Length: 229
Image (cartoon, rainbow, N blue to C red; front, side):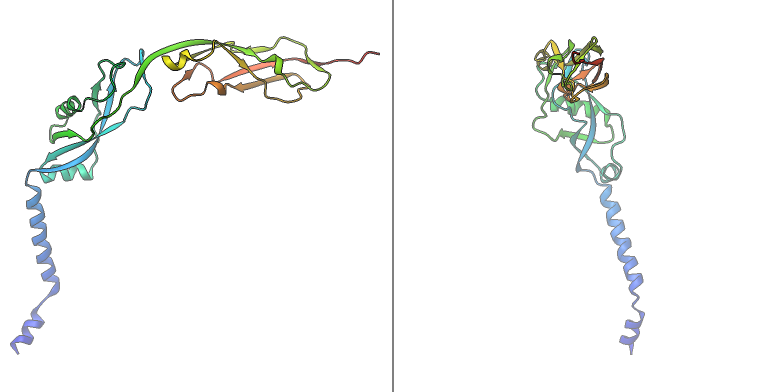
């Protein structure tokens, strides 16, 4: 009889609530303890004279950093990613810099991240590659020898081009290899009337090059040769 009453008095909901409260208490108590570590992504900004130097490989937008703190600090940063200004990493001599100095980067991060202890940057080497920035002027010339005209038609005016020159800016090793003159081909076939179109300069497209113009306007008049009477 007493056993039946004990079975009827057992309430699973209350038991689960007690178990949940105990687990929550243990969790909150654990968060107060120091010594937790976590790898986080932190934004980085590279500081150098971009009027004189240009990176020849993409610079990372962030770095992975190992940090330590109490549970509350790491929980906050794991749920809410870093929303702070990027840390500045100064590239002292871009032409000689081949890797990121992780020690100096960690020191710069420690100055900016006060609530967390920065242990180290999670990377053996982070490659850097720079070249001197160079600007070159290239002359544009129409490729009149390869015009595809319809039979009995000929160019009857000067071939106008706008612009006549363009400026190319980019890494010195790449810019020095460009020609001084760029021959612009007219893509249309069997031309039989006056021509006035813009032609893309696809020969100069490169992710590291910046051009003053990526298209050139070409125009000229076309006339038909009359058969002798």
